[in-house]
Image 1: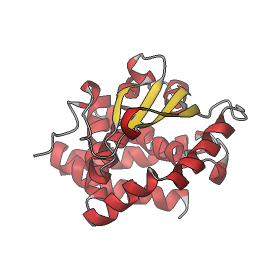
Image 2: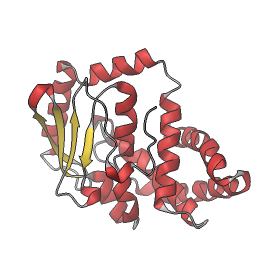
Image 3: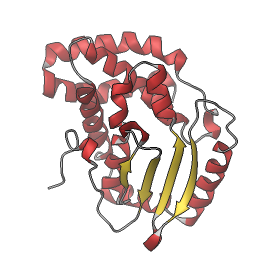
Length: 223
């Protein structure tokens, strides 16, 4: 799928959420402004290794998020409003898939073959070939916990470059969203975007996904 087509999918997914929270008329204005902003942002999305880097899609998606936020900010809305819209749209998108499939993906992502793949990805990041890239490592913890530890966060670098550091506190919303539905038991409470020295995504199957304090205003507790 091309970047432009993927962006259109994102816009279609987020539009109903914007209508729900802000009404049809304002949603139309936000969508129009988001399209304009995306044309400005798209050429600036950093290349951190292309398809060889598992996190390249994360940067592409954050190009959409920056464009949406700027479109919303032009209508007097805040970073929290943009983060909430993205989180709810992502949650709806994931829930279209069967629960068994999501759980299966969660198991696969924490399997030994996946760990081998992620170790190779982490090792590549340590070579710092791309200044705008993540720099991270993989760690094992008690009870089968598996952690991705980020010394440098490409998302936070991107927000700084784009002059939107106010988005940074919400940078881990997607991790909490997919973890809840995939049963990955993430603890994503430690992030550079909140002023921590590093980002830590700690996964452990069988435990509930906690909602970090920075996301309590945008992620609804499970019933």
